Length: 237
Figure 1 (cartoon, rainbow, N blue to C red):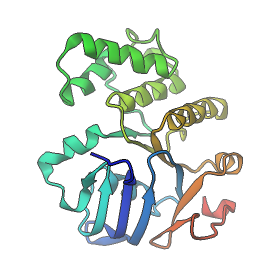
Figure 2 (tube, rainbow, N blue to C red):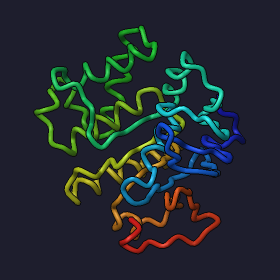
Figure 3 (cartoon, one colour):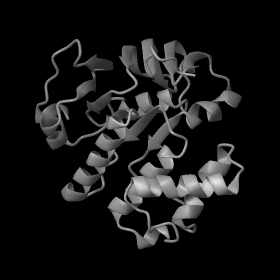
Figure 4 (tube, helix red, strand yellow):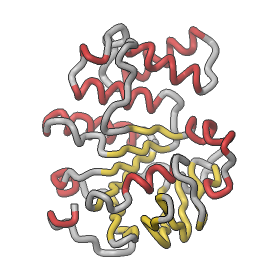
């Protein structure tokens, strides 16, 4: 449980590894419950590794981190599903089941996270689809949807369990600019309702238009615009 005065993410002196390689070191930052934070950096700088650590896909061997009330550095394997029920995870490549309808994709997540009441499951499925502007899409197959609509399904899936934070890895990276803007505005609306957002992006225009706080992976460190001046030059994005 995240207590009212506890950040939804708190990372202290963490070192992040891929195998024997150090990807990031001495990582320290917090994210409050209602914050919107951009995560930027060159390809290979550690953005995805940081996100994977926060949702316990990479083990945290050195340092401390609490996410949605769970201590990642002490997390047991059997506890990982419980952590992920508190998170919404949005990927660039959708990861929808191509042979299942939109509704079946969402039901899969509900069943996997412990929902059993069919009426409550249906109501929640409809609620999240309405919330992302896809109220009529439940019976459609993913291939019948545009890229932007598929990403909205992914966002709906991430919202099923009312997460404390959305972790988004390049969620607009494969979309044309107009569609990407629509997805970004959807994230803003979700944030206004109290869900924290950590969004990895290479979209320099978003950073210019929306001066949210920035975390930047650079030279194996994570710089924080709250405490450090961060360059937004094209070479760093």
